[in-house]
Length: 141
Ligand code: IDP
Ligand code: MG
Image (cartoon, rainbow, N blue to C red; front, side):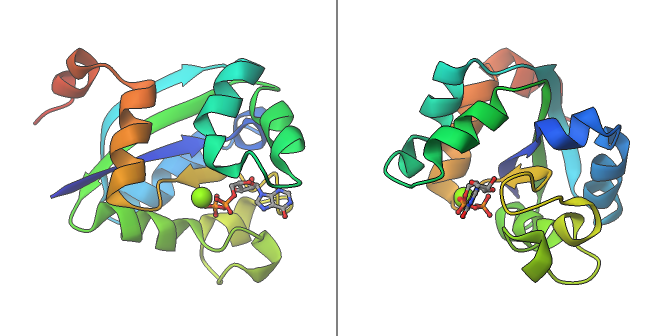
């Protein structure tokens, strides 16, 4: 069993696509074990995406990620990290495979509707960024 952190980004929440995104993950057999809606400050978005601080899109990305509410979720399952990434599709919706979330719902390379952790190290850091131990325990089945 593995856990990963996923986000419904501001463009997904704004377009009423929370349920749609959750459906992709649940239908693929991943379990939602923690979930909350929140709004990141610019500072929090900068911290979350710190790994991209030197990229040309960092300022625009962190403006966008703090522009409205998001939904954070912890997904659990076998190979949850790579499966979540597969279900999401490539970063650029135009290049994402048919049937993926980003191909189906993404707007552009920045407003691509979902985030998913890219490694066990990122997953651990990102889950702890959004959820307390208590919140993680609450979703145990
Ligand atoms: P990922 O979300 O598929 O892991 P990353 O390369 O880690 O992609 O980039 C993080 C996020 O930054 C992307 O999901 C997207 O929102 C944004 N982003 C990535 N590359 C670009 C770009 O070239 N232009 C604008 N935004 C970008
Ligand atoms: Mg990434």
